[in-house]
Image 1 (cartoon, rainbow, N blue to C red):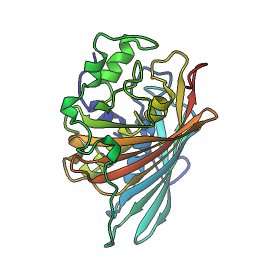
Image 2: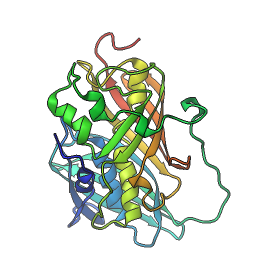
Image 3: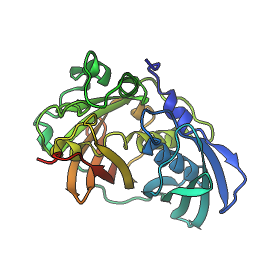
Image 4: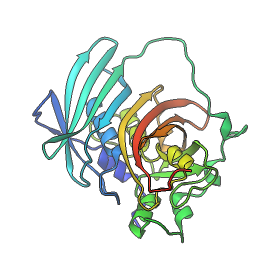
Length: 311
């Protein structure tokens, strides 16, 4: 089994400066191992965010990204990220990032940065559907490794089981239950996932610790965001014939996490918004254990279900 560590994330967001071929700045990064035919989409989201952040040097922080996945990325292969400086204003800055592999554009992202200013505040609360006292504590829930121990079925192989258990850099614990082999719990359009890196996040060359933590949220958000759609359709990941792919993605960073926050448990509350015509849309919100709303994610994905996959 893969060592239980967060080093996969560190490797994913460690960029190498390169000579630009299309725009103003360029970096290269390598997609990380996974047991699927194509690279993990969170690699691209986090790598593009890291590339954009490395071009903003006046203290502004990333507050939103809007992305499209245009082609699948090869696993373990280099992606070139070209960054176009669209605007540098006093209050806001905008970057366009395009990811290229084998000479073809496969990913495009617009990233916006803000200097921040005083203003009125409001924060969403942890959804009441998770219980009057909140969801179960993560320590009360099984890890992916504990859940999958001794289980198999569908398309789940020893390699994919090892990856789900320990290869994603983050411990993930589901409420009401995971959707690896079967849909555990009710087929509702809602779920939550406690997430925490397997060990403390390491420094990343070229990023401050705050920027690294922002990249970590961008990285981990894609693993489970389509799961509430799969849950309500009754489709576990290991279902024979199931094919999924990220299509477009948006993320807003409302509050900068305090130092060390991302090293601890975060609650990722998610809901299915729509599913039809081979696509599903889901939304998610990251909360700290004390209920502070850090970030919001919305993603649409292709969901090709086997015949009879809908209720």
